[in-house]
Amino acid sequence: MRRTLIAGNWKMNLNRAQAIELARSIAGGLRENSSVEVAVFPPAVYLDAVIAAHPGLTVGAQNVSENGDGAFTGEISCAMLRDLGAVAVILGHSERRTLMGESSQQVNRKTIAALNAGLTPIVCVGELLEQRQAGLTDEVVLEQCRTSLAGLATEQMERTVIAYEPVWAIGTGHVATPAQAEQVHAAIRQWLAGAFSPSTAARIRILYGGSVKPDNAAELLSQENIDGALVGGASLKADSFLGIVRAAEPQAVA
Ligand code: 13P
Image (cartoon, rainbow, N blue to C red; front, top):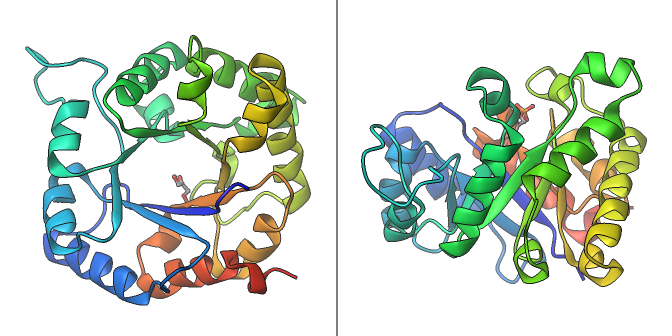
């Protein structure tokens, strides 16, 4: 019922030619009629080039302004992303929360702006290592969900994707165990069932992110409440990204 989504977050990597080439290799390696949905999130300045070079690929941005237009130097609006042909946007990534001080309230405003513009928001949540060690994981993650997704209508929530990315697993090679990830995904889905309804909760995709690689993807994705992956480092090489896509195809999962 929930279509698996494998999303590549390229972060602030690659030059223009490399971005176009990576998109070309990924687009060329996708199977027709695959059950898996694939999306890539290049740096904003390369969105235009990647979309123009590979119109069939689903492409999104890594951030967006909460504002419509006007005096916001350096910002990019949802309408501008739509204008380029972007269809999705990653919001509240832990790097933006910790390095740029983005709050869940701000993520909430961006999520609503994205939904109003017809973009699919991928809203990221996740605990720090100290919070996990203090037994606060569910509390932290569910509070991020409550605030980041506040005020969404059911129809809007059903157009939103959640990504659980434990901060200690991002770029560290310390992937969450499938059981650790599944426990948090199940808690998020249970929260969704209460905040919206069980049928809405059953429709929403919850991705896992944090050191996903071709060799650990199948086991993570076989968990009941893990509906895809948000991939950083391993999305920068077509081979490893496509390896994760293959691992998500049903026959790959034991
Ligand atoms: P890594 O896959 O490099 O750990 O990054 C995960 C991530 O932050 C994706 O958004």
